[in-house]
Image 1 (cartoon, rainbow, N blue to C red):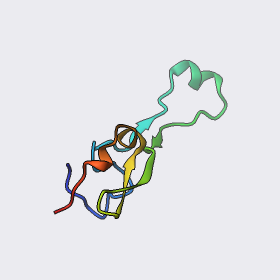
Image 2: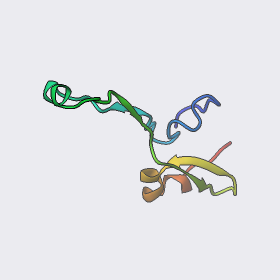
Image 3: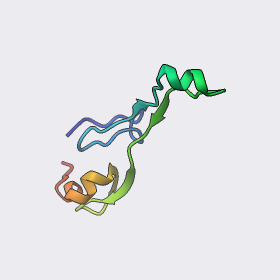
Image 4: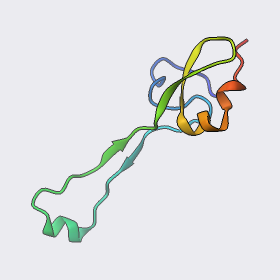
Length: 76
């Protein structure tokens, strides 16, 4: 498990490390035919609050939630 920082708490999943990605590159053909093509966009992971075994909550991605990784997390 990764070490948690306050800075990237809401931007990445602490269990698997899934974070933001840059998408939206377009080809030269799109650039030539569109009036105002948009450039890059930032996509964020789907982070949701998950209850932990000790009663606290943590934001993790939905993929980890489906697998059940939030039930295995134990803070010392």
